[in-house]
Structure formats: structure tokens, C-alpha cells
Image (cartoon, rainbow, N blue to C red; front, side):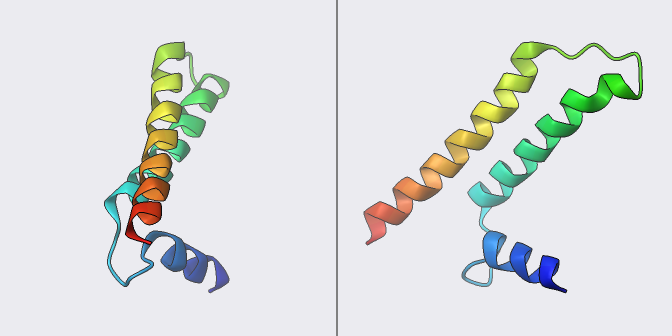
Amino acid sequence: MLLFQIIKDTLKPKGIWEHKRLASFTSFWVSVIYAFCPLFTTFVVQEFVFWGFLTFSATSMGLTVLNKKIEI
């Protein structure tokens, strides 16, 4: 139950899903899964795709923080 509460507090701070937070959370975990794909299959990881997912995740988090600073 603690994990569900952490996810709820992180991704739904005002009771509704926040798209930027959800996008950064999802793109980060997709990049982690994408990086570990060669361990299980004969899959070639493209570096620009991996960095693209991480960059998108960081940008989404940065925009969330920027919007919080502007609202205060």
C-alpha cells in the first residue's frame, strides 16, 4: 500500500493525473527497460534513442519545476 501512496502523491498531487509528471516517469522507465533489452534478446540499442528518452524525462521534470516556481 505504501508504493501506491507514493505513486499517488507523486503523479497525482491535486487528485488528477499530471501529464508532465506521468510523461517523465514513463519515459525514464522506458529508457531503463530499453537499455537492458540486450540482456534478454539479440536487440541492438541505439544510443540516440536512449539519450532521447532520458532527455525527454529531464525536460519534463524541468518544466514541472519551472511551472511550480512561476505559480508561487
